[in-house]
Image 1: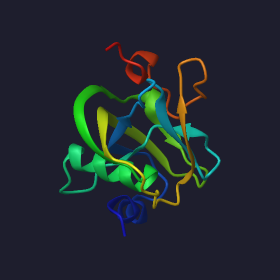
Image 2: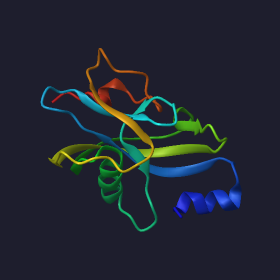
Image 3: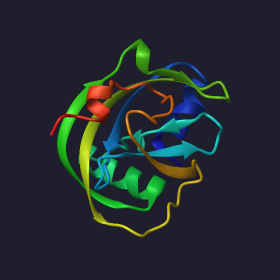
Image 4: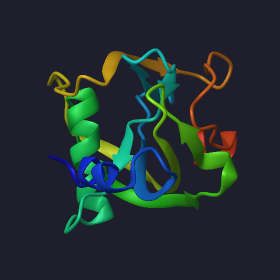
Length: 146
């Protein structure tokens, strides 16, 4: 059982502040990798909560592998986000507010399959084709100037 599931057992659906990570991964054409959530909540960066004892770098590597099948290495931190704009209520009523460290990541191994039931599909997007994201990150973070 994950740490968050254990906490949910203690606090119910109440608001939890959750340290998290997200990955910015671009292909050779500069398009951004997103995953579509199987829950019907739309598109998101590969992202997730940091587990106890895990570094943010380890967490982003694990989350990307689970949600996309890619093996990545974090290259740099592009920003840290939080506050009301990063609150979310899940379909089951669980309420969270994420504090997200966003990493630019480089792919070191491709070709794997995602193992996370949260992922319905993967896609690469340009700024012009970008779907609405949950949460909404600034465009300057999603497509930083090189």
